[in-house]
Length: 314
Image 1 (tube, one colour):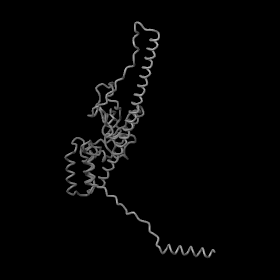
Image 2: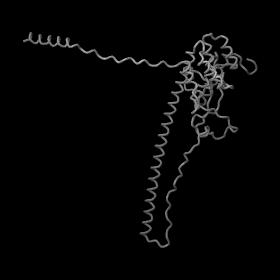
Image 3: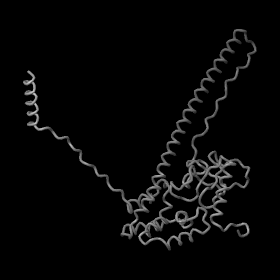
């Protein structure tokens, strides 16, 4: 311990884990998130990976209203700034935090009918009729409002089911992409051919210069709460990695930023990498075997045998 900083990696890790457990126990509503990518098997159960949320800027006023209905308080359980509490948006199609424009305007509420004013000269029969007409209009109004409410409820349930189905589809797609990424790394060749080298250069052109080492540093770190910088972790791993694993090492660095589902109308470099480095083997379709037909001689023999047994019985 030096000052207020702990330089023992194991001690620091246990303190961070205890802090996270205390925060979650005190605030069960906290969403658990991971800011760095790792394989699904290594992820904390129930934690969201970095493609499942959008971290929001901290408001100047802590007591301000939430920026959107989907914003939640979250705690980082793995990755950079582990143990820190942040605010995240969980809606990928959030109208506040995306460029989508919300076109569905709220339907104006129709005011209830008003009882007509009493005319100057109104007979008792006219008053009864006016009251009956007003009650009928009120009944029609309430029936119409109930019908609209049921329609709104049914539409909301339909949209909710569509949203849940889409979220499930995207989650399945995320897991499949993570598995594809790991398969590309595992099947990386020991040396490049021309197409593979050309594709690697494309990845280098598209690399994120600010945090392209983050995923690789997380993967090669031996401590969940690593104190070294990303550069130091990756360089240390590079010095000890086997020669035949160098291409997989390079691919992990430049390809990890493309694990997430790409935006519409943008190239999917992960799928392109799969075609170049780990193409799927075509399925071999086995010819359908036809059942052997019994020979006519066999059929004749069986008939003759049957006739003989009938004669013997007689």
